[in-house]
Length: 190
Image (tube, rainbow, N blue to C red; front, top):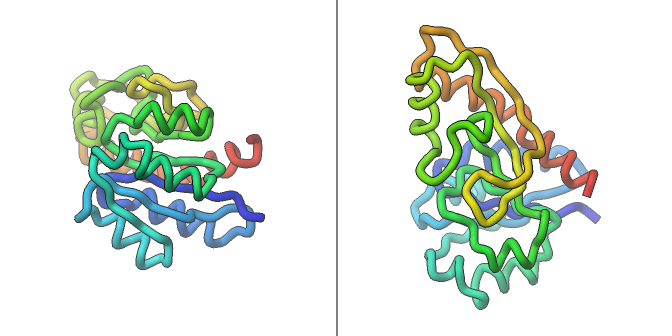
């Protein structure tokens, strides 16, 4: 039986689309549901176009035991993946699915992590501090932003001429190459 993945995302969903397509090419796992806290998020449309169920929810539904948590219990996912999900993840779900929730962060944690550090905010800080390298961190999710155990980090060199936009491009390249592979590794090791 295929492993079951649920993805939470808040934005355009390019990583989600990449993950869905990656697992559609395998018999090992599949994305069974995409959830977003924004009803007009592009990720919902991307999921539907790839024949994956997608649902939006309110913040209240996310933190309720009767809504999202109840649906997740029925689905019994092998892994919950946060792919550009901007809300703090609820402890009620973390307790129900221990060590089954992972996130990707667009920097080398513990640098540039925490509340408010996402997307271009991260890339701008990396450039402002003249970092020689940056990368992605895939980590387990706990009750604190970006503090869960690190699963994998992938690095990329930076130059003095890099801007937040060029850093973003380099990060996206790493995300597209590595995030699905690391998800697969986590599922195989679990």
